[in-house]
Length: 185
Ligand code: AMP
Image: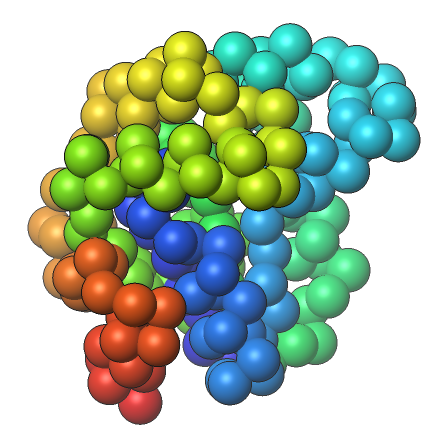
């Protein structure tokens, strides 16, 4: 089993690249954001609990996302591997994921580096095109702030364990995908 985490700030291109990597390497793409949006649109109990936090760009409780990820890993345990997208976002989540995968294969981190100015440009464009409710100016600022405070510290956590690979995420989709493939092969 081979596992990866696509990592980076909101707007770095994680979802797009995760999908391409999943197809190319026959991995299961696990996006906690997509799974949570599904809960919201189905108006499940979890969906109702997380909707407001997501609309504000805050982080959903570790216990909720950890449970979602655990379910998926248990259900789909026979796959060749996972690419996690948008998870982990806190040190607690990172430790939880390592515990879940320890017996299989600890994930490598593929970090997309993109400047803040470019991130804001991309997120605003995505808001206009896809209508994602959290891609508006105020929420974008909050998500970038939450990323810096709570998620970016994970880079040190993984670098210390020599599990971190960083690539320039500012090129075209195909350019970035090529850089990632060169690292994975
Ligand atoms: P994303 O699609 O990854 O940008 O996630 C959209 C929103 O879902 C985030 O702004 C959070 O509110 C929530 N979310 C997704 N993944 C997580 C996670 N691992 N931990 C906490 N909240 C999350």
